[in-house]
Amino acid sequence: MRLVLLGPPGAGKGTQARMLEKRLGVPQVASGDLLRTAVRKKSALGLEAKRYMDKGALVPDDLVLKLIEERLSQPDAASGFILDGFPRTVAQAETLSTMLKTGGPRQLDKVIAIMVPDEEIVKRISGRRTCKNCGAMYHLIYDPPRNQNLCNSCNGELYQRDDDAEDTVRMRLDVYAATMRPLLEYYERAGLLKQIDGIGRPEKIQQRILEALGPAAAAAVKGKPA
Ligand code: AP5
Image (cartoon, rainbow, N blue to C red; front, side, top):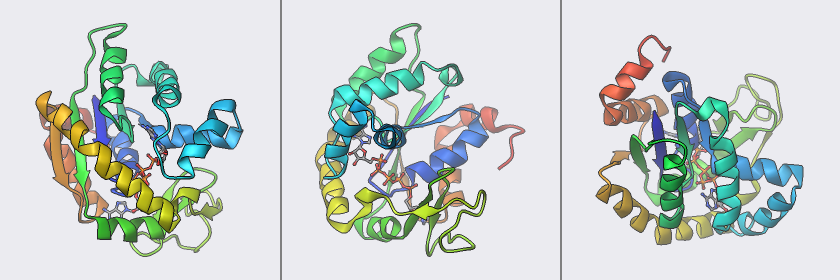
């Protein structure tokens, strides 16, 4: 299955992609995570990307596309993937379509947009904590770790993302508002888009996504644990 998850910052794309990768048996490919890894490694691409990420602006297409193309060419993505945070613009969506057709007649199965109002986004982002070691995600109120600063699974240190500062989040929301409508229209015209309500427990949202994916997802999750 080749799936795209769209939605505003903090909508729960990463949370859902991590849950779905276990059930669908295809990897999460998150452009934000790929960029943050490049930043941590202090590669030339990472240092360039950081200038944009720190402001809450979109990283230029050529940098993002390079990382995505590299990641999608790896063997574990051959039979499918869950794209999280990519594409962000119509230009990126068009390049993705070309990328998939190169090397075979592949195309996306579905694009799911997780819709969450701004006031809920602010609550979700301000409470988010991520494990430095394994990337597990928590929320101080909705899904608190057993120990406030440590990961339940690996005991790694939890941190708050640099771009989750209030001003940067506001900028990220402005960027989302300015770019998302044409992208939603693009996928609507392609007959791929399903919009789902992103309010409720993560398990409930996942159920909505699986329902939106229809029989293909039902076949993929058969026999896999929830
Ligand atoms: P990116 O990392 O993609 O960030 P984002 O899109 O802003 O999304 P987030 O990761 O903040 O949120 P999410 O929707 O994954 O929510 P999450 O599951 O964490 O991008 C960061 C930056 O990189 C961009 O600003 C840009 O600079 C650059 N970039 C990335 N991709 C790019 C691209 N394609 N082109 C150009 N630039 C790009 O959940 C949030 C919190 O809520 C968590 O604490 C979670 O536990 C909690 N939560 C989740 N679901 C629920 C629920 N149902 N109920 C209650 N709480 C919930």
